[in-house]
Image (cartoon, rainbow, N blue to C red; front, side):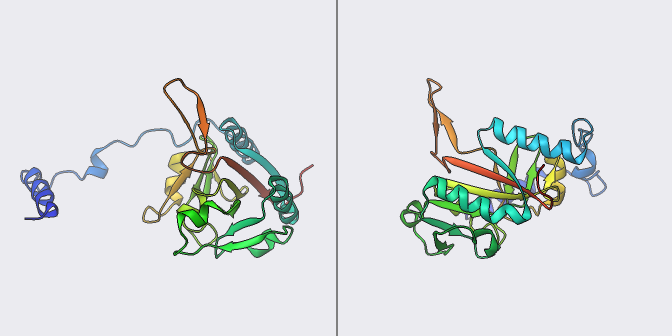
Length: 218
């Protein structure tokens, strides 16, 4: 008997006394928690996202759509990046202002090869204002999960307000649970027993989030 058969057998035994007319789990468990905390305008929600991202030590930038390529080019130049990982579905115009070597997101790339890449630029699926979280779902403009975990510098573009939600419950309603979801709140960080903070252990040391809108900032 395999481990799978043993586990399924235990499940069947546990459910043996459940009657067909018993209330389904999704109806029996109350879902009365708040969907968001307080009422905010769209602008206030975006401001809250920016505030919480910065609180997690992400570096936040704002720009208009027409300014995005120049901003990404400047951020890569300031980091001294010579190479940038590019997901297959990323809008190529985003990198038109950067003089760097483009590295394709390939399944056969080794961790060592990814570690030599200076930066990665991606889009995102959503951003959650109340928690300062960006969510990646492996879509073509975001690439494989590992390309946002191995390189040391990640630039993530969030379209506002379309990709910004207030709360986690609102995010879950819009996300596909069958996709490989990665939830990121700030750059990678951990602390040892003496509470000394170390960044870059299990993800990028530097996370820069660009909130891009259709209108120029005042």
